[in-house]
Length: 320
Ligand code: SF4
Image 1 (cartoon, helix red, strand yellow):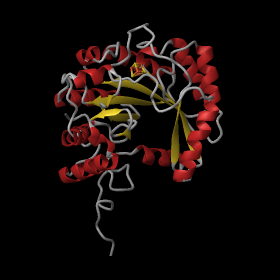
Image 2 (cartoon, protein in one colour):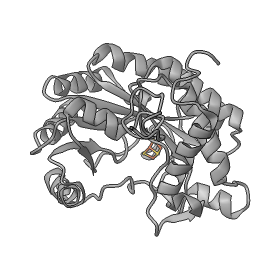
Image 3 (tube, protein in one colour):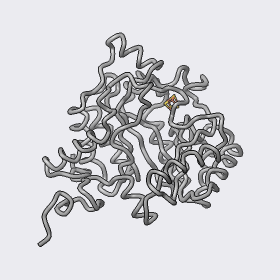
Image 4 (cartoon, helix red, strand yellow):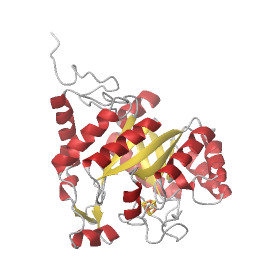
């Protein structure tokens, strides 16, 4: 007789494990038939919040350039280095080059197309992922994205972090939620085949649980293909680190974070992939909160909490 386990009794449709939300791994396996690995790349772009076009100093938590890839190497060299690690770790054969560092639509369209084509042509690439801001989607940039989307499946990741404009001002994001919605719509219309990912950060300065759930509900209403949930990290050398040292910023506790993430998962569309439920920070740069280094424990707590509640991703989508 088949034993009842959390896995076999899981009511959530887009899962083949005990996960009550659609993991990015599950989503990729359902599209590409096997495990795929994402490889972070730095194409050497900058950001309008850093170069002074929109703001100076970057977002308060931004460590400018430590987005996961190192500059100074060609894209192909970075990719090979990342690919070797993934082959050793997971035995992967399919890869997603990820233009992650800074704002990867912030350059003239011909420069963008050259970089996108180079990344799309990397050996073993089955999808290209491009991180940017919704206010950096000029007609030229959208057209460069549309061109590369004809060559390879494309996902475009938009850093939103919060839909609260007061918080956005406090963190120096330098664009409003209205501008985000406008850019999001331009991307949907201009590159209909692109999978759109939206990033949210929990624990931003001054935000309450109500703000975080409002951001999740606002994003759910846009119908993104992927949502990435991050925890705000205090990274050495950032303006946020100075706020934290002065006692002006207090990071979230693990229990509160898990509870908010579960509430948010319940709000997102059931078919949306969850690209992350927490973030990564380099151990030598992270000041707080230190509990986030135990990523597996956080993920396990989310699984346990959804099971305890008897809920799953999307159960309250469009209902709250
Ligand atoms: S938009 Fe991204 S790259 Fe630009 S300052 Fe903010 S976090 Fe840094």
